[in-house]
Image 1 (cartoon, helix red, strand yellow):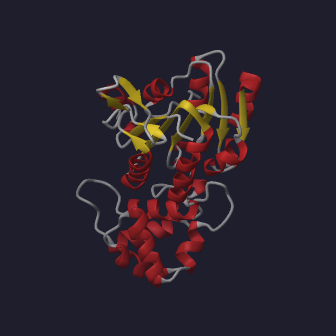
Image 2 (image 1 turned 180 degrees about the horizontal axis):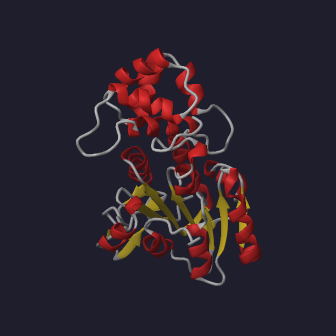
Image 3 (image 1 turned 120 degrees about the vertical axis):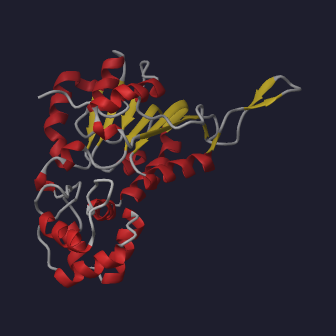
Length: 301
């Protein structure tokens, strides 16, 4: 089986620096970023996080290959500050569902594959089946609208309530298709609803917000924060966080001819969002919606 290569890998490595430091990979998944960071410099170390228990075979493989340069914590990346007590050189996040999760029918993430209506990344807590079978119609509509940006959320929620209970993804897709015409762009009319349920079940946006706030605590001065997101809800959270906590560049005092330290926690070196180039887009369809934002930690405590 070929090694998993995550999107924007070269761009992530360039922004992280990866020159003999300690890095946190908040979204270990198949280990693509972790492996690349460890291979980038013989003195690099990685602390990886993932709440998905199915990643353990890859974790054991990494431990055998890289020894004490690699350590793993089976918890949410939002808990990073509870485990990482010494300042690190970089913190990378690849937000959203992993290819391993969405490509397996048994996890219930895919609207294209029939499987149990689960969607829990950790295997714990409420499942997608719990949500669609137990929530009221209005709350269901609110979830679909808020997390899936589904304009027909009320129509779909009404159909769900009228046709429940649901046990499988296929049953849910069938009901959504019955009330939603297929989009002209060729996408699936169930896509937004599945996105909404997945985000809600896993509290993905809350996880991201907490992790970003923790980055202030765990990064050393000049440490790098690198975040790859895949849809507008995630990207807006990253954008708003940087707007509130970062300066575009250090301010220059033209009279004293020296740099004045910013009162913000981060500096944003690049104004433009980093996206995949043509070559990557040809070879990896998942890269089309990927957006990378990054920032450098300042001296502010």
